[in-house]
Image (cartoon, rainbow, N blue to C red; front, side, top):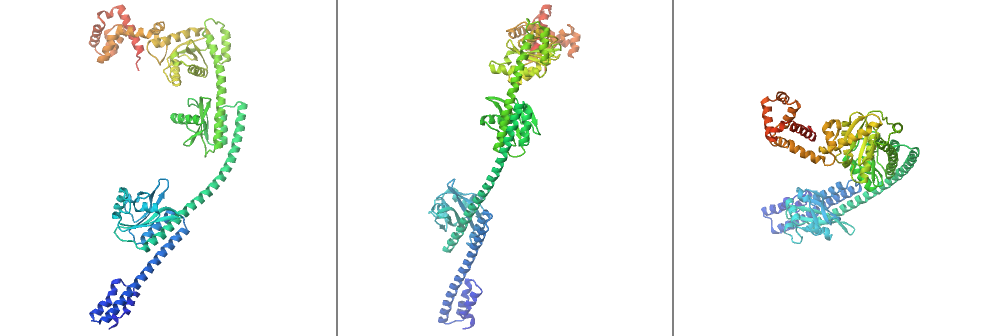
Length: 639
């Protein structure tokens, strides 16, 4: 028998790491050479031994690879910087060393009481990568609950596990069949599960289970090391933060003491809101805006825009409720209050963050601002009472000491010989409660004094004496501005101008009659003067209570059919009547004024005769019609 059929050939095959099938070569050659049975038996035995040696060498090579992978994992742990990277490396090595199609890791969620997918390698299904397993559900949930490795060659057909639709759908979409899962242990606790899986049915060898258990131990160490490292870093950061906090607190205490001394000095010197705002910004930096109760600026230091009214209202309300300053975006708000009364707000835009002591400085500034505003209001109310008493004396017929009145007025900065207009405000704008009345009177006093005038409450109404010569404009301004304060329509009647103390009584009576006329005309919520109402105003001013109903009835009886006809048909009979009477009854001039033909005017007037009766042009009827047209125009002024 030649060399090619000797047992030595098996050694050569082992030396070049031949595939198992090649070990049949010597036997095939011996049989072809008709070797004796003894030789064939010897070769068969040599082949078996050679294959056994080859399997042992293969296992040792595999063990070397596994040990190398474990060594690399340990090296990764030694230089741990990124937990995610280490966990991905462990899962990838598990897939590579076990020759698996997919490897993945789940971690327990103590808050929710389940386990969730943390890392995957080789996965292609989004549903699978987002799976969460309740404890005891599926293979992974059972491993996480029991802390025992489990393996299945065909998960879908293995009834040892509690199958759920969500888990089975994810596993099916990924196409997994054989699954091995081992617990991640920290001492006696299970923190997760490490898996290897294949998309075809095949068992996992004991050595593969042991390898995956080793990798799981490394993963658990990595997770615990990362936790300890994070806790250590957090502790260091906390210590560093505590040191910084102590230093910042010391600095803030010094700032608070300086601010306290500064604002105490302001109070003693009689400083204003502007001084408080400057003191706050000098201590805290940034810009500050002081606002009154209506949101109007009282003082501004630095570049800061006025906040939107809705945002301001919400922030001030929150500050009042919490009893301290509040933050909204980059701005800090501190309500300026006295008891339950809102006096305004301080709005601070600091250069940096505010600590608690800095917030106390802002809140103390708000308190000082409230005291200053209350003091200012007390002074203003005292002056307002003096001004109100002067105006009340001026409007009293029995007082005739004109020179004495002039002297009192000069001390208040008012020249009674200069032209003034009188504005009377209807009682319905004042309100029923004492606080509402006081608010309106206070507003009127401030409004008049800032314009060099006087204001007082008289006979249930509020009267303002204002410098100027245009009573109608003054009445409309008062009606508009006071309506914003009260939130309800305000009717104001104006008269004048008047010169000297004596003329004020007459002007007040005219303003009062104008107010009555506006009410009779149904023009509530407007302002006008007696001159603007003309003779109609004089007539209606004497009507008094119930005048509005009388005017409406008179209009309906006199020109109601014409007005209704225009409203229904969209015609211009009222306009034609006004033009006809306005040109003295001339058809031609009325047609010219209306830009229509004379025949059109004639036809319209014929229609008026059909509506009002044939005698509508009789002198007494014509006067009533003209008066009714004037009243109609005053009740419904053109835009």
